[in-house]
Each structure stands twice: as structure tokens, then as C-alpha cells.
Length: 129
Image (cartoon, rainbow, N blue to C red; front, side, top):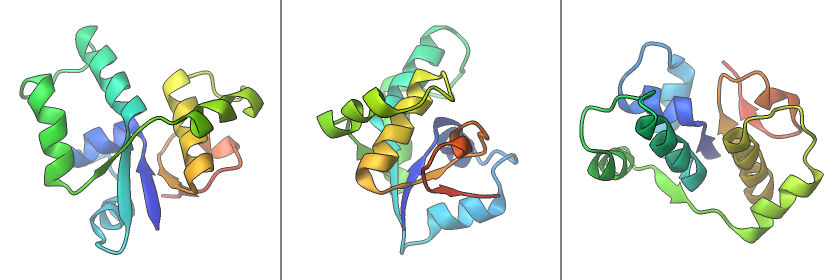
């Protein structure tokens, strides 16, 4: 399975946060699954960090990349095909970062790992808790 981590899932995973459902943790660790973190999620993390809404234990520049590599999570770049899906995406969810993740999941046949019920309103594959 090809998994796309929602931003909060990535942050919960790398910090061993108890809010991360155990079945999500197992799916992320399963070597048979391909796990991705979107560049859009990195952008969201940087914005929240710069606004003082997200403390991190180390410098932003090295921490995120090191954690992604440590946990064997691949980077998913933004591409034109994914961005163009925004033109037909209904506005069920207003968060621009989540909307891009939905588009990337659709364009790349990925399963979104999230606890966000708004994302689950779209015609996209997602893991359920």
C-alpha cells in the first residue's frame, strides 16, 4: 500500500505521541508499505513553526529531514497534475494544505493516513482508525 501521511500523523509518529492510533503506527512501520510525506506538509510545518504554533526539539532545517529519513518516509514533491486537481475538488474542506494532500492522493493513487473527518468526506482512499 502507498501511504500519504497527513501532517499531524507525521508529527505524532516522529514524536511517539499517544494520539497516534496503533494500527496507523503499524501501517507506517510495515516494510511492505511505501510511506510518503508531501512537500505541502513540510510547508505547513514551517509556517506553523514560524508563527510560534509548533515547537520543535531541534532546528527546523535539520530536524524534519532527519526524522523523515530516520523513519524511511519518502518525500512527495508537488507536481502539476496534482495541483490541477484543485480545479475540480469540491470545497468540503477549506484548509489549503489538506486540500493539496487530497489532490496528491488522487493523482498518485495514495491512501491518506489521517484522523481528520473532513478529509474522509472526499472520494479518496484513507486508513480508518
